[in-house]
Amino acid sequence: MHLLIPHASALSDACRHTLKDLQLPVLTQVLAQLSPAWRSEGDEYSLSPPHERALARALGLSGPDGGLPWAAWLAQRDGIATGDLAWGLLTPVHWHVGTDQVSMLPPEALQLQEDESRELMEAVRELFESEGYVMVWGAPTRWYLAHESLAELPTASPDRVVGRNVEAWMPEHAAARRIRRLQNEVQMLLYTHPLTDRRVERGALPVNTFWLSGCGPAQPALAPPALVVDERLRAGLMGDDWAAWAEAWAELERGPLTLALAALRRGAPVRVTLCGERSAQDFEPAPSGWWARLKRHWHRPQPADVLLNL
Image (cartoon, rainbow, N blue to C red; front, top):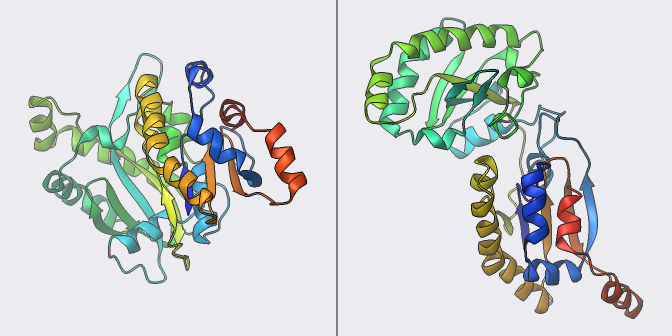
């Protein structure tokens, strides 16, 4: 079993305050039987967040910061033949215009239905195809582009941009100039699109632009049979709802972490990867000698200390 937990920590004062009061007895027992192993060091400004770097390692994918080929990988999972083309993930989103910055809301906040998503993609398709892009629909919040200019275009993961100033995460790469122009054209087109009015009338957020990420050609990927990526902490962290985030930790304790602890007690191999805002840390089965067991008994890692260090 390999349990990968994204959004296990953040740098905000609210998160750190929540962590210090969080009771995680099952995680404490799991960590007591494991040892720190591989670690991905980084900072909060990397384009690829720690959980994406850890997942890429588990899948055997490689690339520079902001260059992990998630679009091609997801497209293949959506049944799209990627061939030798370079792909980018086009996520329809809502940008909120505030008094001092433009920020991006989580894509799931749109609650975009399939028929709406297809209608919007058809509305903007000509803008992209007239520029030589191939455009394919994959899911309500997953549209795909293919073009040779996307082969080495570094981009920020949407998880880095949500709730933050989008300008700070815009790519500076030369190939991004066309994308920024297309963003402006898509914004103007969607502003007057009939679906925008229909969504506003029923109280739904309008789709007013897109975010491009995960660019690059497809790579051969592993399919680890025991890999579990549990995303339940994401909604609370992205929404700054720390009560919900703490409850999601309680659910993890009752569910996957309890299963991991039971597997460890049976002697089964277990790996746990905890991912914060800067770093990801693997924990793997510890040495079984008496000295190693004694050291673990007297030096049990406390979850709050581990998580605050991510």
